[in-house]
Image (cartoon, rainbow, N blue to C red; front, side, top):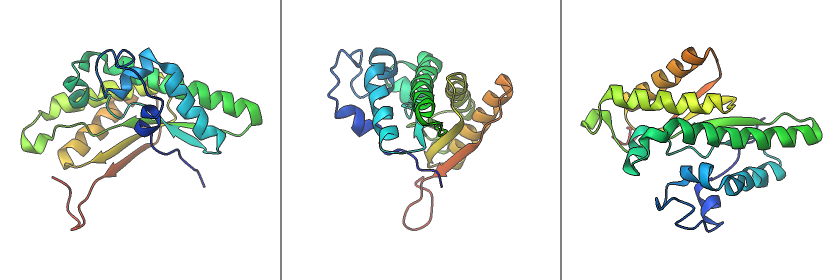
Length: 189
């Protein structure tokens, strides 16, 4: 059995980051990977201290559509790589203390735009996911987790983007994908 961490966003917000910490991009938690890595690090440390085996990176919004809303889409790789690096460092520190392996799951959030509704093109979405995955892999993620997709084209573009990143870097890691469904059994779209 492998035990994973819990929420990231609420744990970050509990540390009361300032607007300056967010580079005036309030709510862009991924920017904290750059401006306040100590806060992000402390969240990972808290989870490992209570015994989890793996943590997710602080990169749920480091994809094209979410990052573009904060006008930081050009920083997707940087935000992803730094988020993975922070988690990797903490995982390695805890593994070094007791010899028990710890893992890093590179979080790829779904974003805010759905290609099936014409919000964004498939190619732009796929390429953004690829940059996200490349950063996560470069930062040391042991696996990638595509979270809560709600549109089959969104799901496909995230998987293809992640696979392209692995191919480009010559790395093969597990790829986990979760989809969001309504109580009726259909996707949220």
